Length: 262
Image 1 (spheres, rainbow, N blue to C red):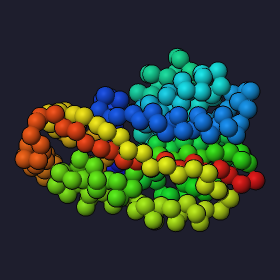
Image 2 (tube, rainbow, N blue to C red):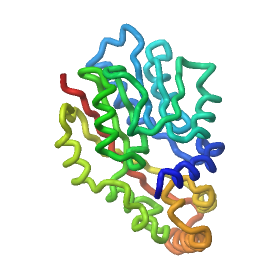
Image 3 (cartoon, one colour):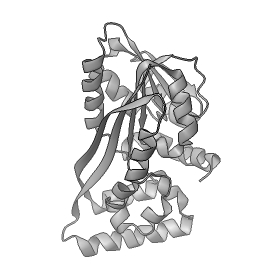
Image 4 (cartoon, helix red, strand yellow):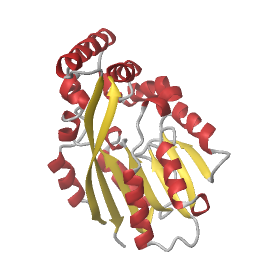
């Protein structure tokens, strides 16, 4: 998927993104615990949310830490997603909105105390982004990454029952691949690595509605006719596997906390 295709996808779903995506509070609480342990937070910290989208996780972090303690910079390549973020956050919090790619951040060296990346690292050129994150983070600053591995993706309701979902999604790292990349990073140390599991409940119709809305960018890898046909097979697979219209399943995600070495 090219950057132009990615931007087209997010332009199309920006207006409904907050409705169709689930927010996981657990990694935000993990971030809060780490920051309270390592920082005094006597004055507002500068936080950059790279790939911020509509600002859901930025807002949750601000609320968790207290609005008076955070000056947030929301960075996203999608102008439409940032517009939605502005409509929710601009009047409430000390937030700034920057339309930019993650691999070329328009900030001076040693600017931020914290960088967060939620469900977006697979959209970036990893090496180039890490280089930029290292540059704009202050010494001893924190980089928090929340993502899904290939193994976790294959274990989702989509990976199990939606035709081609796991095979088409090749942007995610395998677990060993991710850990290897993180361990080899220069001037960063891993201070936390957590694998979260979330019990979910949805009706079949709710899941089908999300698939039609293309709530994951993976769905943009399907041609239109192929996507429609896959949704029908997905629905049939669920009806065969579950005895009820109410579906109980599990999502899994990976949280990594890195700290920049002086």
